[in-house]
Length: 163
Image (cartoon, rainbow, N blue to C red; front, side):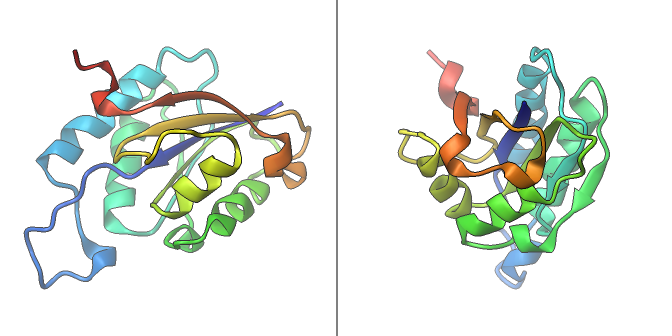
């Protein structure tokens, strides 16, 4: 069994219009919510053994905050192809994960994450910033991962627990 925590980067800042999209950092809410979501994930029995993230600044910032907060402090790997609008970037990243890992986290962007998650059964309209979906695959090797085998086990986002 292989498990992936798919996370959308935390809320980013639009304060500096001169910044390229790839360079946008997190805003104060993003800096609060990323570790809050990681704290919720600490309740899971199996923690990510690695975090693969987009090279966009907001995704890298999110990955660092999450890795620092998770109990097992997983290493971070940068993956340029995750800075994409195509769901195929998500599946290719998952299929390329190292064999020794059974649990991984992938941090990326919409619309790629939404499109991938719709393919595995997500019915929510949109995965919000800092949102996390846990998907399990009944396979032995990451290369065998396909949407048809996926089971969406858990979906959470920062505002879900508000009253």
